[in-house]
Amino acid sequence: MARKKISPERVLQELAAIAFARVPDYMDSDGTLKLGLKPLQGAAIASIEKGSAGVKVKFYDKMKALELLGKHFGLSEMCRKLAAPLWMALQDRKPCPRQ
Image (cartoon, rainbow, N blue to C red; front, side, top):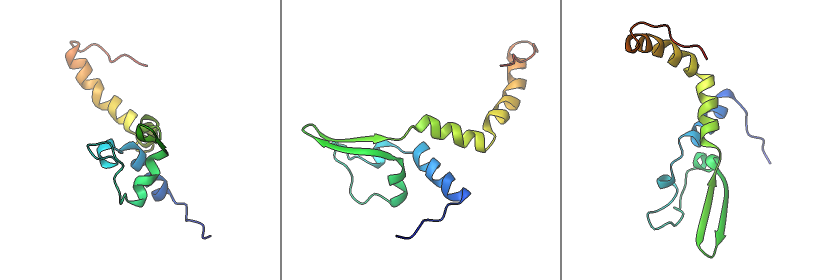
């Protein structure tokens, strides 16, 4: 079996697949699993179970993936810098509270 190459780009692709997975991309409106999913879509699926009520698809933690992507791209610091001037304007120029 050939080992897949691990790279920063591949890690980001996998995280993005988890972070931006949407149920309509995986399931039809009648609740059946769509056929022909792309390989990267599989990265978001933690498990698939077939039961008497139909197919149950569990996804990996979307919020954790978004958090990791946000940290990678420095979004929390960027949001803090962008929010401070707005906060000051809304609060009559009071300093932005620190966390």
